[in-house]
Image 1: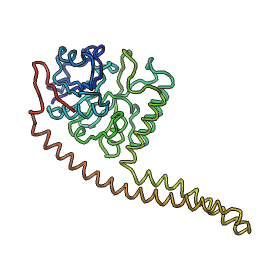
Image 2: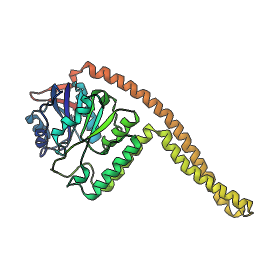
Image 3: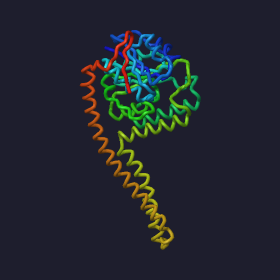
Image 4: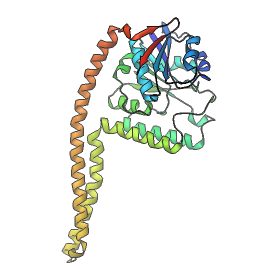
Amino acid sequence: MKLIIQIPCYNEAATLEVALNDLPKHIDGVDVIEYLIINDGSTDDTVEVAKNWGVNYVVNFRNNKGLARGFMAGLDACLRNGADIIVNTDADNQYCGADIEKLIQPILRGEAGMVVGERPIDETEHFSPLKKQLQHLGSWVVRKASKTDIPDAPSGFRAYSRHTAMRLNVINEYTYTLETIVQAGRQKMAVTSVPIRTNAELRPSRLFSSMFGYVKKSMLTIGRALMMYKPLYCFTCIAAVFGIAGLALGVRFIVYLCMGAGDGHVQSLILASMLIIIAVLCGVIGLLGDVISANRKLLEEIQFELRKMDYGSGHEEVLTKTKKSEDVKND
């Protein structure tokens, strides 16, 4: 059983060594533990710190690609290097490294393919009251969209089995945390969570510059993921809103017409017609989206089979070995 712990990094030279020192060196039930960082276009000494510490693999981007792209590149490198379990954690040492053992237990027991670490949000001192409320709200929305019971959806402290990791696809360029839960829930993957601890804040979060920006990007990510996996449901709901409004105005016009006052309410008839047309168009879009979604499922199955063939065959030529690490070059 091989575990690879991956850490996305962007100018993390000041905190990376602290995070690496906190990671476990041995876990019962795991034969090999290796370490990988994703250097997302860092301009400081992040890579040197990682190599000096002794990480096994470094995935390099020449320029900053964002958290979601970095996460997927890390999964790819972990799978290519034979990981049976992949753990994702942060370079700012937000999460307690000792809890990795707890995080992977549901996978070792065969109970889940994806495990999310549940932070004690309300007890975390460096979270503002507004951020705590937004974290709870965002997690609630994700639970409804994904039909899972994950209490801390934005948590980046996660474990994946090899099989689950090969099925993941992240489309947005913002973050992987929300989309992967919606995707896993809608694909009926086994997803669970375990309570974890957090460490004191070493630096402010870099994922968002403002609460408004965080909420906007998160809602767009959730909405997009839901439309990808449940297009007919989403567009039927939208069509229902316009259709009910249009029918209500149409009935209102008929009532006035029967009362002999129809001439003064022609505008209502025009608006009702427009709303009903919009509702019909939304319904048609939903049907087309459902057909596209079915084709996407077929493509995902093909991709999964190709990944099994690809990762199983090795492809050592993409790895350039150094004394202490292996650099995976990414454009």
